[in-house]
Amino acid sequence: ARASGESPEARVAEALQGVEGAYCLLVVLDETVVVARDPHGWRPLVMGRLADSLVFASETCALDIVGAVVEREIAPGEIVAVDRHGLRSITALPAAPLNRCVFEHVYFARPDSKIFGGSVDRSRRALGRQLARECPAPDADVVFAVPDSSNSAALGFAEASGIPYELALIRNHYVGRTFIQPTQSGRDAKVKVKYNPVREIIEGKRVVMVDDSIVRGTTTRGLVSLVRAAGAREVHMRVSSAPIISPCYYGIDTPRREELIAAQMSHEELVRHLGVDTLGYLSIEGMLSAMPTGPDGYCHACFSGRYPTATPSEPELLRAGSSAGVPVGIA
Image (tube, rainbow, N blue to C red; front, side, top):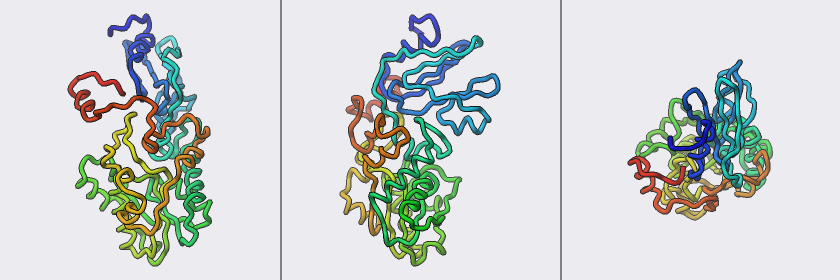
């Protein structure tokens, strides 16, 4: 409202000069739609065309669903304005190193999307193949995924290892993502109704259970118990990402470090706590090597603890301040 720019996109650009962090914005100013992506490119943002209209979404699958044709990604630092005169694009934000979120390809994005220059399904299969190379389970009888976000990685693991892939866990699709549940009791309850094992596949078998990540460990520990109860002879856990040891300050409400199980336990303690025979994580280098545009230009702070921007020293205070109307410096 106070910006001095003559056009809507210039005013948005001026307002964003003081914002640091991850954001994708779509705002309406009078009769102009203004779209902006942060200069680091943390989150995906794409543009498509539906008849004579332009459509913007965070992932290409949303455009597919409404019948729009994907045109291109909004570039990091780009601001696009659309009005009755057409489309205008400016790059008025300060240039910054690329820090696209690697966890989008590991977990958050849908597998039928293309983001950051490549297919999410293909990168997840590459993660699974690399996982099989780094953490093999040569004596296992079957491989299965923790559905649904791990399906592609488990297929990649089976392809590289030669171990048969099976549908051994059935997911209840009316239950949401468990790690986002705000309370432990809520997470425990949802784990019990979210998955059901197929005993005929698991009983008496040495199984490889592939998951994309372990956050608090609640879901994983509950799943291992379910698989054991279904008669598994051995349970070998394989994770198609590195251990999550740090919270995310770039748009994802992950837990505090004290709640991240990999930050609180050694590898041996994790094996005992989860109740598995073996546990294998993908390395950060292996994870980045599976990205569609190569290993460079990705943020992996939640896995490495190396943040590309200054982090808030008191994140709880910042969150409380933002809800109370106090300006917060990290988006």
